[in-house]
Length: 195
Image (cartoon, rainbow, N blue to C red; front, side):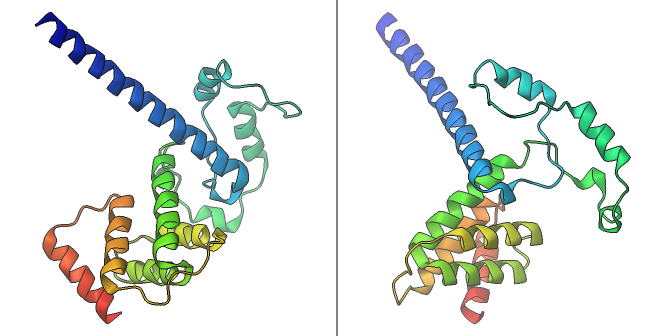
């Protein structure tokens, strides 16, 4: 009995360690993506000072970079005159910093898998179909199109079945966090066949 309890405790610890490793790898992946593809960075998104302080002890210091506090950034923004395009944006609609990155990572993974499975052109067409059908918001559509545009993968097979395209689109729904019932999925597949 004691041995079983010990095994269970060790299994729980392993599960916790796996989650921590997974989270760390996702953070590393996000940072690599930000470094190599700065256009993926969300507009007006700055990490909080608390996050910088918490990570300062774990990361190697960058050389040649100037440290700027959030207060300095806010002062700088207040000094600059507002541009006409910025007035239309509602500040309340912006997500909290760091809130979107797991979603971006899922979209990056989906785009990579989709290009590998059905090719770059078909993936772009699938994104447009999903957006036109209302299953994908414009910002996600633009982000996905830009991600697929960055791909230099080889073209997919000449023939790809509609079932595979449907599966790719269902995976896109999961990547954007859209949970659909069976009737909605069937309607979506009918729209794909017609589109």
